[in-house]
Amino acid sequence: MLCFRQISSSQGINLKDALQWKMEKKQEIGLRLREYRKDSGKTQGKFGESLGLTQGGYSDLERGKNNLTARIKYMLEEIYNINIDYLETGQGERYRIRETEELSSEDDTEKFYRDQNQRIIFQLQKELELTKKENEYLHKIISTKDEVISALKSGKLKGEDEPES
Image (tube, rainbow, N blue to C red; front, side, top):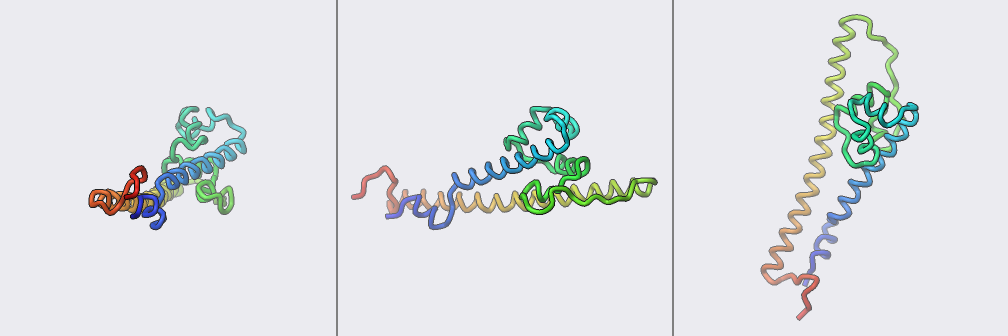
């Protein structure tokens, strides 16, 4: 008879490992965020304030307790010239290449806000893709657990604590 561990490992699904991976990823982002803050020479309070956060709210980001929102990512990019891809993955250049044009007219200002909206849309689309992938993974876990429950109910699967007959 099969047990839950055999089914889940055969499908490559392990909820504990998935949650651990997600937590580690948030902590890695937090460490890179701390590097950027230290580069700026600011305290957590001042850096957080520049992003519209309290010191405690910003500290939660550095510790990996909370996720970065699209708004915070945009502000990090615009205020500190941070390469968000590097922040999230550790890949590529730490800072993005800044355009040298200064905003000098109303047309430039309108372009700035249009570009700002495009960046926010792009970032939200990236977050949506990640959420969809996480959702697919969770559906696989749910499906596996449903299979185990059905197998237990039908007697085809013994629980780990049940003795073999």
